[in-house]
Length: 242
Image 1: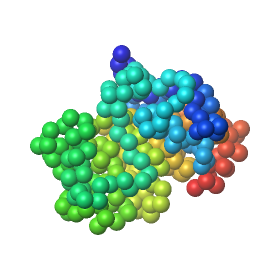
Image 2: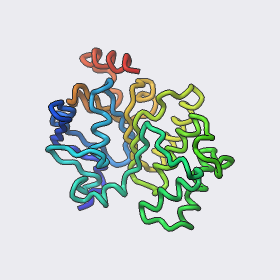
Image 3: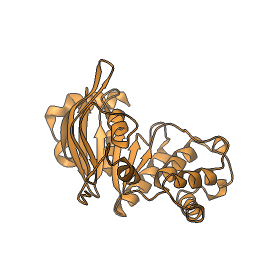
């Protein structure tokens, strides 16, 4: 059953890779329209959480819901609601960037004419129109980052999940991506962002969750979490990971 107020819900989610416990009874919620920052050092469980949420990995126990749809049982409904912007540039090398977006839209049942219209609109929004007929190898690193965002948004998902979207970006591109994300959130997108960048979390997000060694350390509104002196050691570890 659809829940229109809670975008993401995890309840006692546990995940093992062989004997390594990557997630240990992880529980939290992200409200509709929130801009949620998920912080933690390398190996803390951020990407594993995303993979379980989007169906890229199975979890051994616990419950994950996306707007009320069970991410395992109702995977078709839940995955339609999510756009994932991963870290890797995993594009088909034989397609132009416009074709890449049209092809991606097809996975969600969007017909070619409508997919082409959406692709053109996204390429214009992210200043990639001039590269419409180029293959991704002809793009700069910053352009590829923007193409990842276009691909995640092509089916107009209600939730945008970004795994360290500004890692390796120069300052100009980082600020440009921040502006894009802030505008998308204003337009109603629920955004789930993993990051090592404390400035990024402080600048963009409304709510912050901190994970360390597979366990949730703290969840709360940005101001309250950032003022919590008991979290200084974790903040130092996160900052060091960048």
